[in-house]
Amino acid sequence: MRNWFLGAILALATILALSLVAAAQTAPPQVKGHSPWKYYPMDRAVGDGGPAPKRDLTGTWAGPGSGAAVPKGTNIQSPTAPPLTPLGQQLFSQNKPIGKYSPAGTNDPHTRYCDPFGFPQNMANEIRGMTITTLPNRTFILIQYMDVWREVWTDGRALPTDVSSGKDGLDPKINGYSIGHWEDDYTFVVDTTGLDDSTWATKNGYPHTVDAHVQERFHRDSKNDMTLTITMDDPKLYTKQFYIGEEHFRWIPNQMLDDFTCIPSQVQQYLKEMGDPAGYDLNAPPQRTR
Amino acid sequence: MKTKLVIMVASIAALLAIAGPTFAHHGAAAYDMSKPIVLKDAVITSFAWINPHPLIKCDYKNEKGELQHWIMEMGSTPASQLIGWTRTSLKPGDVVTLYVWQAKTGLPVGRFNKVVFADGKVMRDTQTGADNGGRADTGVGR
Image 1 (tube, rainbow over the protein chains, first blue to last red):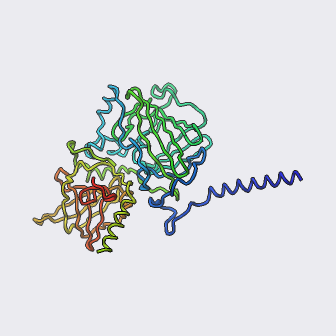
Image 2 (cartoon, chains in turn blue, red; image 1 turned 90 degrees about the horizontal axis):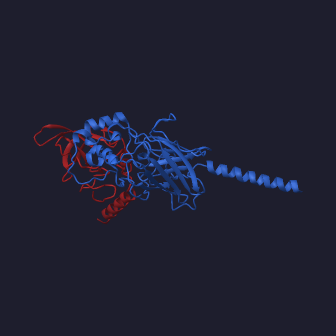
């Protein structure tokens, strides 16, 4: 009798487990007449979708540039930096951002050559959508714009401490070295350092060093909502912590994103035929650079 | 009249509904946004659906009969798609009227404002497509 009871419980548990797996693999709901292969910004998640699942950011998310009416963030598009150190001021003064100098006058390496934004700019600029997925020892952040992937190690290792000096043989990286942990059931914290300092920290030209320490806090607000807050500590360049900003994400019902990337040959065509002949006007009023 | 009003309200509502997506890469500091240049009976020579901004190229004969080759940029491809643009919206040989915010350099380049097709249909830019140079996708001034 006892074996029969245990067997029944086991069978029930197995069925439940399998049904959960099956549910997870079920195709997402489709709007009639819409292709499952296409991103439709008007097909939006409704409401908050219920409570946030615990320790789970997995899925494809619409960002502020997605067309899905994602709530606006703060500071993120054109961040205001804290006071700079003399070195910070010197480096910042060398950068000519597109918002002021237009494509013709900027020396933004992304605008002119499609060079990678690098981190942390690639989590704040042109954020249209992203996908997050996990392995047992890593979390991957896949950014739609420029088809970037970031690797966040969750196996308990510490961040490297001497990338800039090269003592342990590590080179700076475009996306740096990242580790992550769950601070609580809904907040995933990612710490990153070892950043290639040829990239700009922000679209409006603020620099960073190799030793900058950037922290991202992904908070799962609900089933359909996620908030990301980014801060940077870089005492060689900034006198205080740099609050880069906060941005919001919404769950995409069919989990598709569209395609948008910077293609060097097309950018060269654009600059030759359009951007450079158009010139720039430093006396123009401040421009929105969306 | 009532029907027109309903269509207008519905159009504005639709445009408002897709507000927010139009990440362009830069502002319009390089362009004279005071009044668009009107290129009547312009002949499309190329529509390059490229990043970061699609390019419209056309031939236009000015009042003196001089042939000009114009190039204008518009909102990014994903932003433009949201208000109905596709890579085939304009085709070589199309005869249209183009409105463009010309570059302050005075060269025949500029930021696209809107196009009026032979059948009267109008398509606009995302970021500078309103008649006042504001965003067409929100109806809000620039």
